[in-house]
Image 1 (spheres, rainbow, N blue to C red):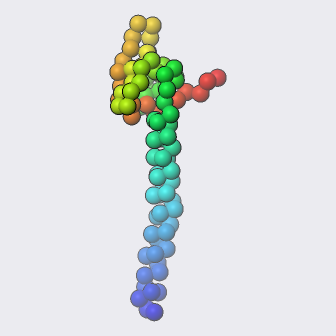
Image 2: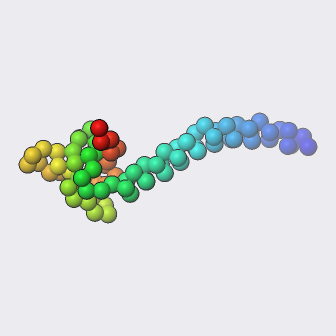
Image 3: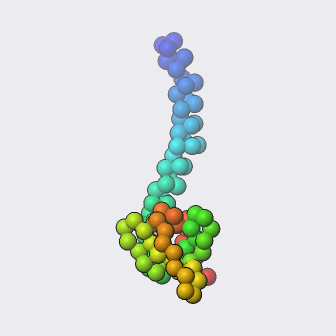
Length: 87
């Protein structure tokens, strides 16, 4: 009984740590993976480096992004930070 009472603060600290840090990070990672899987040709994106452009080619690991009239750059698919909303 005494060991259970002694472990109770540790268990409570772990529960708080889980709900405040681990679970939200897992949720963000799941949302990011879903966004990366949903990328498609024509999406307007912003890369992790801040480059704005439109996806013109896409495969499993990389994407080609048009950033200017005659400028296309190849990025890893994971370099996409977010898809810009269509205003």
